[in-house]
Image (cartoon, rainbow, N blue to C red; front, top):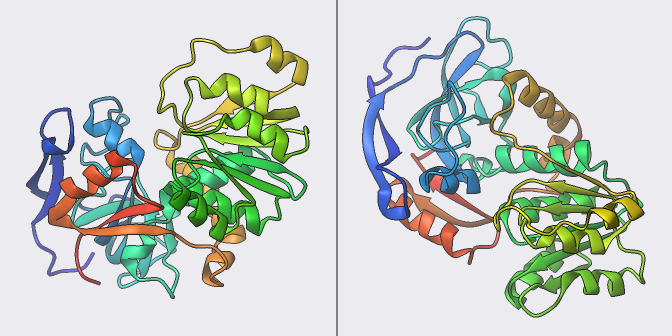
Length: 337
């Protein structure tokens, strides 16, 4: 441990469930790192859909996790718990947590922590952990993306989408198709490396996918929408296609064409990241460090950030998230680097 740490810290809390108006500011005791944990003075905290769901009362923190929102942070290590070997006081890091990121200080297990890329400001590095771990888990570990795949990424301009485009491009996917809601978002995705963009407001994506792939369909679909998209995904998928569900923004599907899934021999799976154990997240972090961190350090891939808000403007940040007008990530600047 180091000295000279304050006893109290500023945090963001949710005063009930609802819209951005329930966001409030409070004070909590600065946490003490447990065995295997590092204490980070937070410079940046990424904003993610699970934060919004928690604010709305639809996604309570896992048992044992902090009720303070925020799943990813970046900053400097200011204290270490017993047994920590990978990091020392003063190191620039970013990390994944199950809660507690919207705060001036945050404890992260050392094995869920990664070195912040040297060429990025820490506030930028805060946009990496949750998003890159989610994409790696679902697109590569579960979706088994390969260089010959045709890929469909829903929500192409989101933080997840912009990351998925870059990683699919870096790992030589044959075709990267995205769904978006505007021409501005389509242009942004194409610039990142998508080969095709479908405006879901104007076009039926399943029909467009068939045309864009000369009738083949896509081999892998990353879906955060759910609802009516499930059946359309089955129609857009190629034989032996894989569909990975990472969220259900439209809710559950009332009409799933199971027979089509059978005929095409599709695989439809899904996962969440937040509730996984420290050990499970550590395994993901190790793969990221080995296979993706070199690409980030070389500047081949990286976080796409729409807006960085001051900590005091958290309500505005959530208003932007709710509007879905952003392209890439939204980040809170908690303190100066």
